[in-house]
Image (cartoon, rainbow, N blue to C red; front, side):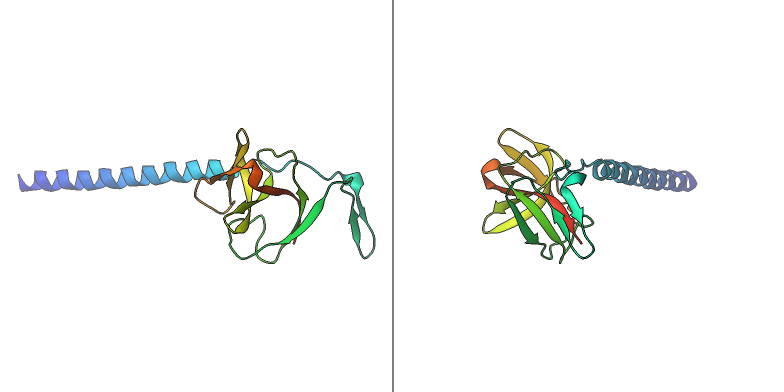
Length: 151
């Protein structure tokens, strides 16, 4: 009878291990699918608007207001960009779609994250390197849309 109890306990432990492995696989696959299927930003700058010379380049933004920003060390957008990289942003109002990267006011600082969902008058954003599902940003808090990353 003691041997039967041992076998039952071993079977229970084996079953627990199998369930743990299965749950881990499901979680891994879910996150892999979610993060690999992020939308890409919409093209804003056309090839004919970029002129490259021997020692400089010119980008024509067709009369749209553009600003420059330098990325601080938060790691939220790795691998897209990181500390020390620079971005060019088209000042809004602008057409923002899922996959675009926007900058917006949050409390007393500016955040640059990807739009993962578009709502009515608001955008759900998320850092590419963040596990959290992101936060909703009111359209009135949006400053600009990233149109170029300079590494």
